[in-house]
Length: 135
Image (cartoon, rainbow, N blue to C red):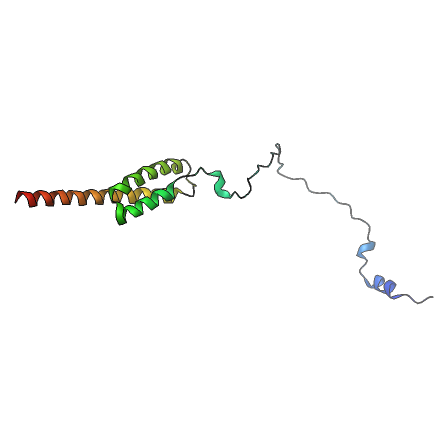
C-alpha cells in the first residue's frame, strides 16, 4: 500500500460534504401568489430629492415677511405675508404630508397676530391724537 499524500489525507478527514450526491427535494407551495404587470421604473431627475414630488410653495418667504413685520414693517409687511401664507396654505392643505405645511401655518398665524397688534397700535395712536387735540 502506497503512502497517501497530504491532500488525500485532508480529503479523507473532511466530512465528505462535497462527495454527497445532490439532494432532491420539493419546494413547498406558496400560499399567496402575486399577480399583475411589472410597471416601468419612474425616473427621478438628477439632483432631485424626495421633495420633488410635492409642489413648491412660498411658505418660507411668507414666514420671513411675517417675522420681519414685527421688527420694522407693521402692516406694510404683514399684509403681503398673510397673502403669501394663504396661497402656500392652499397648496399644503391639499397634501397633509407636504414638508412646508408647518412653515405655511406658522407664517399664517404670525401674520394674523402681527396684523392684530399693528391695528391695536394704530388705534391707540388715533385715540391719543384725538385726546390730545381735543384738550
